[in-house]
Image (cartoon, rainbow, N blue to C red; front, side, top):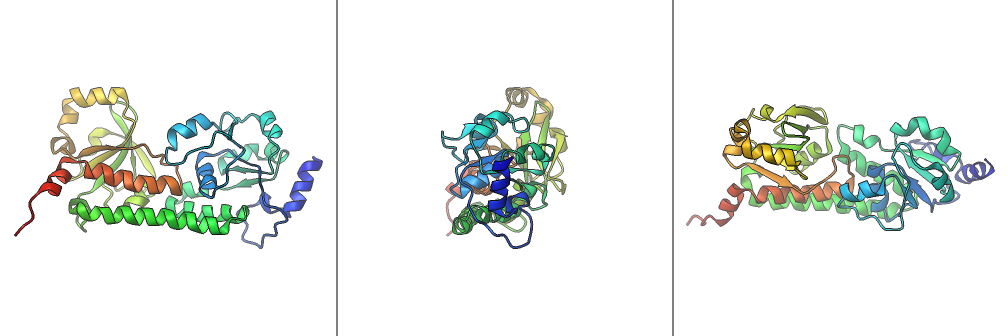
Length: 307
């Protein structure tokens, strides 16, 4: 308790309410940070801050492929049941959590000052929210310049991906073909991403049309619901479940879908829909790669120029 009181005093109470809009006096910058959320860990790493501990590091490495995690980061176990003894042994001076960890906050505050962030995922514009939270974290870590640079680099990468779409006028034009962004769950269902998802916001920033008109972040549907627009392309996020791959070879219903009959289906590299600014930049280029790999795009690229 004395250690916690001392750290709280050094911070002037700042860490106990990171979203406060008041002035923030900092007597010390946190050096030993624990992050219990993958999306916030990505934002932290984007600033050049390596946590001493994180929840489920093997899962992060599998899923957040755009964000290499140093071997020095200690695995603290489950995201909502972390190893508290191990956390204490790491002697953190800051713990970063999300609103979903609210029931644990009291226990965590006994270990170190605790800050709640991660609201960007509930925002109708998750990417813009992630940029804002990156800057908040940068202020917390005394890395304002790094925060500005990280956000600028992410936005520049997305702008570069949009420029690449000039070679794909079928999608980039004002009335371009719409795109379903989805991830398969099993042989008949998939998670389709709406306008209020990270993927949905990035589609808009790339100048692409989202074929799924729902405003929700995502919806679980049967694949047979993806027939509203005969011009639509389906881009699915890998990996593809084995049962889904089998279904694609055997199901007459699937083979009758408009995007299957016209060859407008492509898989793209895995990107977490809960990711931050690094995942967003990776998504933008991975999506353009997937569109460029379509037969129609390859045909257009090799078509002779009009004379």
